[in-house]
Length: 372
Ligand SMILES: Cc1cc2nc3c(=O)[nH]c(=O)nc-3n(C[C@H](O)[C@H](O)[C@H](O)COP(=O)(O)O)c2cc1C
Image (cartoon, rainbow, N blue to C red):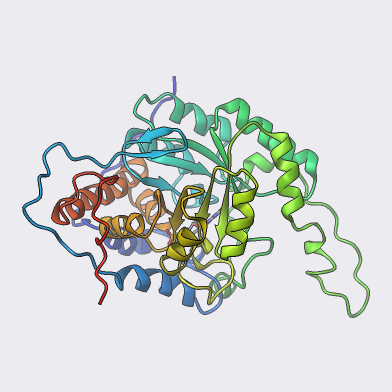
């Protein structure tokens, strides 16, 4: 039996994800705020992600029959109550003492898919037990960073399989940290007691002594950076479906489609890796066109409104993920805050669907987006 965490109350006046963000700013210390809200370098991609969803317009339809409508969508062989998943976000105990366990309770209760980070600050088994106990739950996936030791990766994957995770989300856009200026300015460090507990005992391999003129990255850390060969190896190690997260180039998407993967997450890591990438709302339709429906596409980055969710589906996504907003909800009120963020997004999605004459997401009008 999993005991749900004690329920906090939501502060008054929070009616949108932006309100959650503003309130979380008052609750998190500088260190945690820099980590959760920051992005790489000048944070241009972070801003562009948002601007780009805002720049799309929905074209309403009137007098359409709407009774019996719903937000259900098919994904990887099952039907989801709605197309909103929680993106993998590391170290959630820095936002709230209950961390990923609170997030798991909220996701499961709201039928939202949960993608647990390799760098979670709670044991992956405990998170899985919470989610799997809830009959109305959404999918439970494990986000994988390939470790430089294949034995460690294999062990992590086996633990995830045994615990009941239903897919692996292999993140491929972060072989190295972005230049996180905001974190460096804040002197970011992980607080005592918050760590990547599922990697305990997996020490990173020792770096070689560099010769003068050698690069600490190319001749050091990146010697073991994952390649397509490592993905092929991973496929031999697991029976779980694999999605690739962090694909932006159409050629990478095509290569992934040839490899019998389960799906792609079109993502720029919320602007935290390479700054000045295109926003995901701009990339998604190109990849959808390049793949012609060969693989399910998910998208994240800057999704803050139910209208954004509808726009993403209109551009070819099967589902979306949100990152920072639910961490802000977590900081504000633990599981209640995360649940509130999910409820707001879903309510806004239903309102947007109704006003666009869209009874179900599968039968949405093809001209949902305004073309000036
Ligand atoms: C604080 C933070 C930590 C993150 N940690 C991970 C991680 O461990 N693994 C991963 O694949 N993505 C990670 N991401 C990226 C998210 O999964 C997601 O791609 C991004 O947050 C989506 O953008 P949004 O925050 O604008 O919704 C992290 C993002 C944030 C903000």
